[in-house]
Image (cartoon, one colour):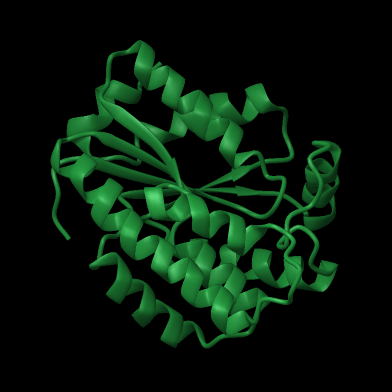
Length: 218
C-alpha cells in the first residue's frame, strides 16, 4: 500500500528493549521537529486498549490459541484504519511497537499456526500495509526473560510461557529477518541501552528511503 509517511516497526523477543529504543527514537525525532507518532500492538487504538487487557493479562479462564489469534487480528484491523493509515497519509513517521511479524513469530512459531495462513490473515486485516523498515532487537531468550522479570511488573501471558515457546518465537523472528533482508535491520540487543541506540541511529538513516535520510542522521 502506498502512503506518504514512513512506517517503522520494532520487533523482538521478550525483554529485548525494543520499547525503550522506540521511545528514545521518538524523542530524537521530536527534538528535530519531525512529525511522528508512537504506537503499539496491541493497544494502539481506542478498541485496542480493552483488547490488550484481555490478550496479555492473566485471566480467570484459559484463552484458547484461536481466540487469542483473532483478538490480535481484530486489534490490528482497528489500529490500521484508526491510527496507522491516517498518520501515514499526513506524512508522519509512525513508530510501532510490534506488528504483523509478531503474529508470525508468536502465533506461528509459538502457537504452531500455519505461517502461510497467518500471512494471508495479516494481509486481510492490515489492508496490505507493510512496514518500510522493521528493526529486530535480537538477544538470547534466557537473557531477555531475565530482563523482563527484572522490571518488577509481573509476567503477562506471553512472558509466562515455557522457555521452548520463546525459543520458537525467536527462531521465526530470525528466519523472517533472513528472508526479508531489505526490510529488516537486525541489532544485537545484548549491548547496553546507549550502545544499541547509537547503533540503531547509525544504521537507520541508510535503510530508510532517501527522502527521509537527513531526518535520521545524528
